[in-house]
Length: 555
Image (tube, rainbow, N blue to C red):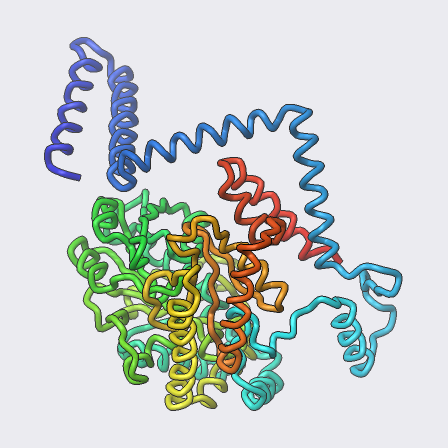
C-alpha cells in the first residue's frame, strides 16, 4: 500500500474518532465506538488490498459474476426450475454410474465380509474377474494416456514389489520398531535435497503432491503467525498454479490472490504479483513446471520479490520432479528454478511421477530445518502420550517408502538422466511437429520439460480444440482438457516415447474431423463448455463433480 493511501486511511480514522468520540461519552460508549471504528477501518483496508491485488476491472468483473451467479441460483430454487435441473443432473448421474459401475446379472458385489476367508487363488481370480467386468478400462501400456501412469518398466516393477513384500507391515510412526524404514525415508529426502541443490536443507516425505503443497501452506501460515504476528494470512499464486494451493488455503483459512499469466509466455505476471503483496502476504508461488500447459514461471523474479518483502517462495516442482533437475545436464535449455535462486524457501517434488516410485509418495523440501519445524504437529498434553507427526498422517505405509527408496536406487543418476533425455526429446518433438505440421493448432508458451498443451490457432476461431480432444478419445487417447484458454495437453511419459508418430497422425485426423463434423457431445466439450457457458455453469459443473465423487464409492 502506498504512503498516500495509508495516510488517507489514517485521516479517515481520525475523522471517525472526532465524530464518534465527542466530549461527555461514557467509557462503555467509547468502547462500542472503538469497535465500530476498528471494524470499518479493518474492512476498508482489506477492501483496498483486494482491489490493489485484483485491479478495478477484474474486481468489477468478479463482483458482476458473483451477483449474476447468485441471482441465477436464486431463480433455480423456484420449484419448476429446481425440478428441471435435478432431472438433468439425475440423467448425468446415471450416465456416470453406467460408465463407472459394473452392471448386469453376472456382476458379483461384495457388500459384506465373507463367512469364511478365501484363499489366494480365489482372490486373484476374483480380481481378474473384476478387471473383465469393467470392460472399458484403458490399456495404459499402449502409451496413449497423458501422465497418470509413470511406469519405470517391468524390472522396476519387480524391484518395487519385492520392497513392498519385505516391508508390507511397517509403519514409520514407530521408528524404533522399523529403523530401516526411518533410514530409507531420511535418505529419500537427502537425495532429493541434493538433486535440488540444497544438501544442508530439510524435508519430509508425504502421500503425494497435494499433501506436499498443503503442508507448505500450513508451514508458512504458522511461520508468519509466530514470527510476524500475521493472523489473516494471504498467498499469491499464478492462475496456472496447481489447485492444491487453493485446496490447502481453503482447509487452513488462508486467502488466495490469483494472478493472470502472460497469454504468450504463460508465465505469471510479475507486476500483478508485486501489486498483490501486502503486509498480510506470507507466500508467493511459482511452478517449474505447471500442470495445465507445462510452462515455467520466472522463479528468479519471484525470488527477488520474496527476498525484498521477507516472505516465502514455494516452487512447485511436483510435475517437474525428476525431469527439471536433469535438464541442463541432458543438454536442454532451462531457466533457474531450484534452491540456488535467491528467495526460494521451499520446493515440492513428486517421486511417484518421473522418479517412477510407487504412487503415494512425494517430498516437500525447505531451505533449513528451522522452517520445517513449522510443518510439524506436536501435542505434548494428550493423555495417550506425547503425540508428534511431521505431516498430516499419523500411521503411514512404510512399504511405499521402501518402494520409493528402491526405485531411486535402481534408477540412479544416469538412469534418470537418460529418462529425462528420452522424455523431453519426445515432448519437444511433439511441440515442434504441432507448430510445423498442424497449422490449425498452436502450442501454449515454450514448455521446457515433459508437458505440451495445444489450443486452436488464432486464425482458426471456429475450431473447438476440446472437440479435437474428444475425437482423440475415440482413437484411444486419454488427454487432459484445460481452460483459460480452452486447450488440450499431454504429459509425456516413457510409454509415450515410442508412439509420438502415431500421436501426430491421429491429431491431424482429429483436427480434420473436428472441423468438418463437430458433434458437440463429447466429454471435454460438454464439461468444459458448461463451465464457460455462464456463471451458473460453474456451479453445475460442481454438481456434476459431486456426482462423480459419489459414484467412486458406489459398490
